[in-house]
Length: 162
Image 1 (cartoon, rainbow, N blue to C red):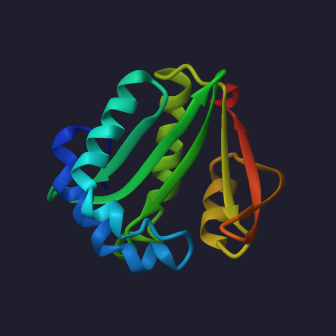
Image 2 (cartoon, one colour):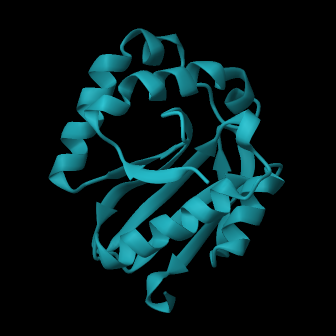
């Protein structure tokens, strides 16, 4: 089972490979990051680490036994005891419960290590896999939203139920 690790500088090469290898797969269900993301990846990675150091975000990667990244689970916009959850799993690793396991782990970290009380998430209505992960990890729908022009749902999870 891949190991959840807090994002570090040495993750950069494997993380870039993960994003490049899965670009088309991710773009089928979420907005594409764009060419600039890849062209300026080193700068972007350094900026994420600097932002993480402030406590405004907590970035995590799922690392396999060969050192490759097979997923990401991030908490962004940390404020007032809450954060927004986001995750993505490599196409080759999808459907094996990795997202569910990683989200469970990040929920525990959010409560115990980061002192958060509520996590929020959103996904499009047509992303059944993501909706299932959120349901299996204790998130409940709290309203509708629009993501990249597509209808979606907003979810929340209170972390006091750890």
